[in-house]
Amino acid sequence: MNRGKLVFAQLMQHLPLTTFRRCVTRYRGAFKVKSFSCLDQFLCMAFAQLTFRESLRDIEVCLRAQSSKLYHLGIRSAVARNTLANANAVRDWRIYADFAQSLIGIARPLYAQESFGVDLQETVYALDTTTIDLCLSVFPWAVFRTAKAAIKLHTLLDLRGNIPTFIHISDGKVHEVNILDQLLPEPGAFYIMDRGFLDFERLYRFHEAGSFFVTRGKSNLQVERRYSHPVDRKTGLICDQSVVLTGFYSHQGFQAPLRRIRFKDPETAKTLIFLTNNFVLPAFTITELYRCRWQVELFFKWIKQHLRIKAFFGTSENAVRSQIWIAVSAYVLVAIVKKRLQLSASLYEILQILSLTMFEKIPLDQLLTQTISEQIQPVSDNQLILFA
Image (tube, rainbow, N blue to C red):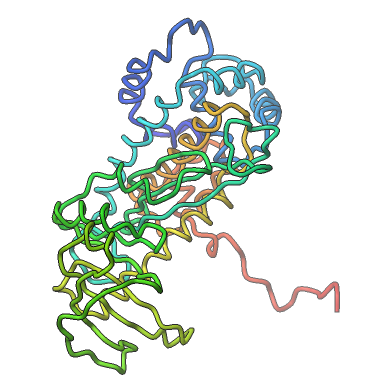
């Protein structure tokens, strides 16, 4: 079926192009466009993400060197640096944001049965924010501090498969707690977050919706103990209490009882205080849930290392947002391919293989089912040692 097709073209076959065209129509992306379409722009930028290109000139040189294969890649127009730069600056970033959300909708059911370290049937999300530093003179619209620019990437990560379900891009001045206003609570789901999101009035909205949250309490938290539950101190638990908030503003925002768990981490010897509105799960399970929050930190680290979201191809706000959303689309697309082809290799290994084989004509499933360990031949004992 894929005989003779380039690896990049085989990969892009997993894109729902009908949905992409609807996104383009929704935001009039084809208005006054004669040759270089939104799909051409998306494919060029996705190619840059998957092959680790560093600049628009880099993209242009690489694709022009393979100009005879552009049609087979799905790119119908010649690639020029100025044309790509103008497309990034002008074409509405919401086209690629909506398309990324559609890919997320495809990926999540594929990972619905994945394990994330805690035996729990409910959906578990990790909410966190990462900051991407920018140069103020180059990105004056992203003011963060007096002499510094930055943007923030607010992400809600589904821990089953590490698929981002909600992403909001803001300037550096927006505090992460404000993102709680934009989330639509899912009844029965767990939201794991750090102390930066501790706002009891906003968290009460999740409580009323039937959602559960797990967060850490601050040192100046004022509570009154109502009941103490027995705990097994051998697990590191110190206490498991039902409490009510006694601070004036906190009590006004959250009048329902809360569960307060003190836990001493045996690895770091630090004492941690957890707050949750779930009174059913064992106390140790609550601590394990919060430990899983570290996956969103690893997600941020991974995309910053393996995708192009720290150095941007354009300086306008529209160009930056477009690049980030196309990077998210590339990440989710690789996750979809990994599941559909039932690959055991990690996303990192898949990306590394794809970055070197985009213009090959090897069937994609055959290419990616070969693990790195199988490709590396063992060193013979009879081989001469060149350096002692």
